[in-house]
Structures are given as C-alpha cells and as structure tokens.
Image (cartoon, rainbow over all chains, first blue to last red; front, side, top):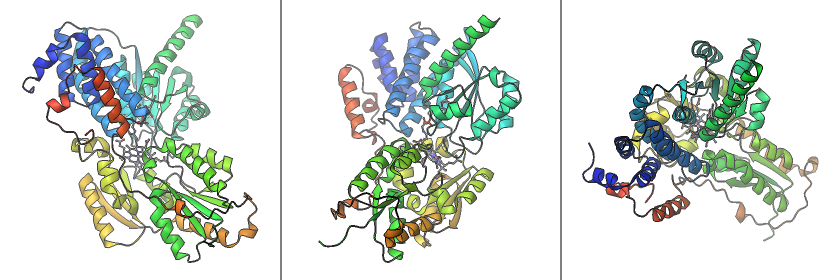
Length: 235
Length: 269
Ligand code: B12
C-alpha cells in the first residue's frame, strides 16, 4: 500500500526530523504518510502517548493556529483532521493497552437546531488526544439528550457547540435546566462556536468560552485541576 | 460634474448588490448610493464588523446624511450590532439573508422544524461553483462532501427572481450535493421594505434629524460601485504559500511528499 521509495525516505529521517515531517504531512492532510510515520516511530520504540502528543497533537495545534490566522481555511483543516484520525486509529488500541485511565470525561454535542459539526468534532478529537474520554452526542441535541447523557456517563465536563446566532441561546436553555435540577455545579460547562464570545458564555452561566480546540483542552485541564483542588480542600 | 452627491447610502454585503440594485432601479428616483463590502466575508464573519466600521467612517466622511446597513447579523454574534450602535445606524433585521428573504419568523419556525436543510439564494445559485464547490474545496477533494453535507437532506432554493435558468442551476446544485431539491419563489422578502425605507428617506431629507454629518460633497460616486465580486477566495491565499515556502526552506532537507506523490495540488500551486 505504500508508494515506492517513500518508506525508505521516511526511515532515513532521524526521530526529530520524522516528527517534523509527520507534522508537515498532517498539515498537508496526507493521511497515508501520517499513518506510516506513526508506525515508524512506534517501531523505534516510542511510547504511543509520546507519538500522539509530539507528532499528532502538536501538528494539529499548528493547523489550528494557521486556521485562526486565516492562513488555512476549512477544507485544509478537515483534511488535516482526517489525517490525524488515521494516526489516532493506530494509537488508540495501544493507548488502551497501557491501561492508563483517562484524565477526565466529556460529553459534547451541537445544540438543537444546529447541524454544524466540524468544530465540535475537532474539539472532540483534540480532547481525546489530550487523554480525555469523549462521548460525542452529535448534532441537533436537545436538552433531554444532554441530560440523559450526563446521567448515563457522569462526565466532569459538558461541552456545547453552536455556529448560528439563532441556536446559541439554546445553550442557556440547557444550563438553566441544569440549575433547575440542582446539578449545575456537578459539571464544568464549556461552550464554543464562532459567533460566541466570553461575554456570552458568562451571561448564560457557562464556566468558559473556548475560542478553539487548543484552548478547549487547556481550559478543560485547568478547570479540572481547580475543581480537584476545591474538592480536596472541601473534603 | 454638477450631479449632487446622494445624501443617503446603503452599505451592503456584496451578495446583495444585484438585488438591491434591482430594487433601487425599480424605485426609479433612487438618490441612494449603494456601497458594498466583498461577499466573501460571509466565510469570515469575524471580520465583518471591522470592515463595516471602516466603510461607515468613510461614508460619514463623505457626508452621507443617513446610512442603511444591508447586513444581517451574519454570524458576528452581535458584534456587528455593537459597531452599528456606535455609528448610530441601523441594519436590516434578522440573523442572515436566508431569513430576511424568506421572512424572519417564518424562516426560524421552519429551520426549527427541519434543520437538515441547506438554503440557497439566487446569489448562491449563481456562484455555487465558486463559493460552495471551490470555496469548500469540493472540487479538489470530493471526499469531503459527506463531511460537509452528510447531515443534510434537502436543498431549498429561496428564489428572488423567477428565472428558468436559475431554477435549473439550483436543481443541478442539489444534485451535486445529493440533496432533495425544493424551489420557492420568495422574491426580495424583507429586503424590499428595507430598501424602500432608504429610498423614502432620501426623498424626504428634511424629516430626518438623526444624522447631521456635514456634507463634504466630493461627488465621488465611482468609488461606491458595488463589489459583488463572485470570485472565490482561494482556499489558501498567497500569504500561505510564502509561509509554507519559508517553512520549507527552513527544513529543506526534508521531503516534499506532495511533489513525491505527483500531486500538483491546485490549492497550493
Ligand atoms: C463550514 C460551514 C458550513 C457547512 C457545515 C458543515 C458541517 N458539517 O458542519 C455547511 C456549508 C453545510 C453550512 C451550512 C449552514 N450554514 Co454555515 N458555515 C460554515 C462556516 C463557513 C465555517 C464553520 C466551520 O466549520 N468552521 C471550522 C471550525 C474548525 O471552526 P469552528 O466551527 O468555529 O470551531 C472551532 C471553535 O469555534 C471552537 N468550538 C466550536 N465548537 C465548540 C464546542 C466546545 C464545547 C468548545 C470548547 C469549543 C468549540 O473550537 C473549534 C475548533 O477549533 C461558517 C462561517 C465561519 N467562518 O464560522 C458558516 C456559518 C456558521 N454558517 C452560517 C449559516 C447561515 C449556515 C446555513 C443556515 C446556510 C444555508 N445556506 O443553509 C446552514 C445551517 C444549517 C443548520 N441548520 O445548521 C452562518 C451563520 C450566520 C448566523 N447568523 O448565525 C455562518 C457564520 C456563515 C455566514 N456568515 O453566514 N455551513
């Protein structure tokens, strides 16, 4: 399945160069090449987690930065994400074998009336890459769907995505329902989507607005740590 | 030239240039200047507020007494409204053009009942190839089609003018996307009344005390031509290539996989 001569070329690179090459291939959306690079690093004895973070997650972070800066547009991001997915498919079973517990759990979905899912999928992927277990509810999620998933999966984090100004108010419907049921504080609520901003997140009572997937990961980690400390102090 | 500068302007999204032009022509005595921002900002709504801000300042400096903004919120999440508030000007109501063409309440009710719908206006039908097919990279990467449109079932063409060719083009667009085609003639919807208000305001300047910016009277109408430029934003602008070149030079020992694969990559080359 590999193209003639290429395997040899990749193998000629030292580790550092190979990692850079994987990042570049990821940037270019070259799935086969990314998969090949991942396999080579594993053969060289790299830990799956290290391959994931240094090659794939870091590569996707660069894609995210260039997307934000208007250097890349949506199709390139999708191709890069697809390449990353290929690499992750190789690593996922190996990561599971190591038995390391996920660092947290997140339920995520696009809110009712909205069927944009590119950004949400990217967040889900990067959260998984950062070691979270992610339950993706998909698109057009109403409050009942969110509540049922929270009940079933008991995550620490609830993530909601909206790309339409007409659907973003629905996030408040979900949060208000959590408040009504007295379970709002059981979860860290993260919201995102291009038309949102911090002021909106605050106004609807979310814990944070995240501008992109990288910020989502950082914020999730930071708020988890804070929560952990608070619980520890309160115990 | 002795022709007077119109005292009223409409600042519009380029995607509405043709339609507003038609409405102004219909009204006959249109002493209203139409100024447009590039329609392609649609895909970068976060940039709309700053562009509109600059254009409003420009129009103010040119002495327009009253300015109407033919932009919906367009995904700026209220940011555009904050800019308009600062300038004391108003925009057409609604979240986007699909809604004001159809009628905002009717659109929202329908969108809630049936979210799996992709809407096209005449403008989008005309520029389907450049904005949707090429804009979303579907020409180069047809495998992305299900990633974009996998969640959709039907395409609704909200038509402004009754035109057999556009109807057919809309049908072909639906076919390309693998969606059920529906055609609905909605005309100019709420845009008609909005333009009408601008026209009326230009006809009766004395009743309007809202904006009393002094006339600079440059009479420069040429600068205000509509830019409904249908050209697609290249998926990767030039700056990207130079950036990539820089990155490549930096690591010139590494492979150029794309070239090695014989993929000329129209995006990049
Ligand atoms: C691609 C796109 C589409 C694709 C969607 C494909 C898909 N499977 O999702 C298609 C073409 C199908 C589409 C359809 C429509 N779209 Co659209 N779309 C876009 C576009 C151009 C890009 C969105 C995108 O995918 N960006 C790429 C991702 C990576 O970025 P992102 O979504 O912002 O996500 C990042 C962050 O926001 C954040 N994030 C996102 N979600 C979350 C969630 C959490 C929990 C966290 C922490 C972070 C986070 O992290 C993400 C990754 O970094 C935007 C314009 C824009 N630039 O935003 C319009 C836009 C959102 N669409 C718009 C509209 C109007 C529509 C349609 C109604 C148009 C139509 N003709 O019918 C339909 C909607 C139907 C529906 N019911 O949902 C408008 C919204 C206007 C408004 N007032 O709200 C926009 C703004 C374009 C415009 N200016 O008019 N669209």
